[in-house]
Length: 186
Image 1 (tube, helix red, strand yellow):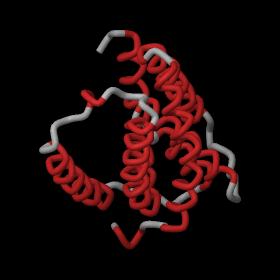
Image 2 (spheres, rainbow, N blue to C red):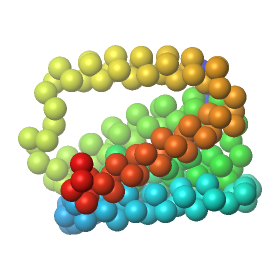
Image 3 (spheres, helix red, strand yellow):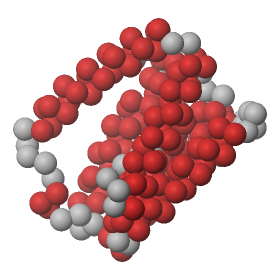
Image 4 (cartoon, rainbow, N blue to C red):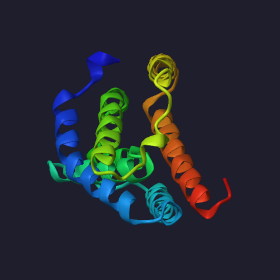
């Protein structure tokens, strides 16, 4: 799977995600968590439902879709921990092949997670007591490695169209969970 990572795409997304992460850290500091979850969950669910309802999203070549996805992904990741919807929509409009998308998202999500936590900590957007105990980091690393292996096995078993549908369903599930948390259901 590592051979399928598009490192130029990764760099472009991450560079454009930085302003989104910074803005998201400030939003987290200023807006009540439940309100933020309701807004973000609603926007994510709405965008994914609309995109799924369209026969085919328009093809948008060039750097702008990637830049917008970077900023939106950074903002979503810093505020709600769900950059996937922005990335899935970007992959659809940019017609990124599924194996390249799946491989490139792994380092993007890891980097956005690191940037979000670091930025929110430096800006004082989150209290220190929200961090997990130190031993969770190695457990998380093992979980990521296992997830990567399972994802690679599943990607081999599913075709590109099925893989894209699974990615859309997971992104929709993430947006729904965020919305329900904000509403106090979960």
